[in-house]
Image (cartoon, rainbow, N blue to C red):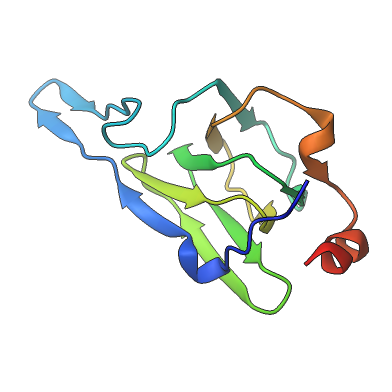
Length: 138
């Protein structure tokens, strides 16, 4: 597998819209409409103990949208040369993470929920879990 040559600057915050009514808000994410890939897997991280981090890996092929469905957290993106910190704290904003980038999630607020929309089903072979190995590939 070849790592994509994406950089942290290729990742962006996407406003996936919010429809506000007197009875509350709704945000809709639809394949090929406001997300540039077909979602094959959805999962969420929650009940993260204070001071704990998640992520700490890169993907060869997988793309993701990360959403702070509740609360807030930080995402550190790393392309082997540059690092970028993105804070997520609004449920209508998604961070689009491209393949080939190292990511770490930390600074989770109490009660936060990180919703992840993924372009591929889970595949252990798509992960690089060792940062030194990641840098060798880059």
